[in-house]
Image 1 (tube, helix red, strand yellow):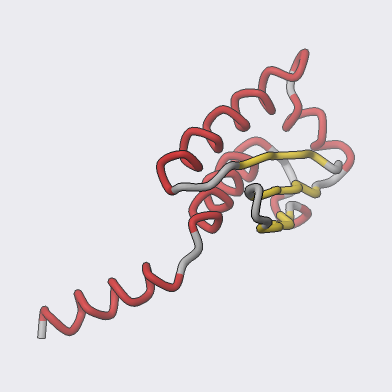
Image 2: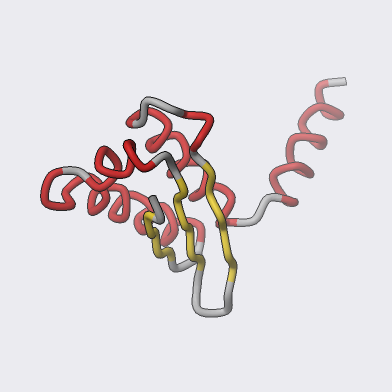
Length: 97
């Protein structure tokens, strides 16, 4: 029975795109920063050159995501690019506000 569970887990992981893991990380970080988590949405676009993740949020929360002098979004981009390299994709993150 344990083998069946392991096979099911492997199948679901195989169906997941590399960009999904990066998007999950970005969503987790962003939702921890904002006041209105329900307004946060990610638009993930996979291209040959890499993955583009666009973050949409409430206008009042855009400043929290960007941070003072852009330090927070720079850290989010650094983390997402590092994970992207591990899973084999190039990643760009943009805030739409």
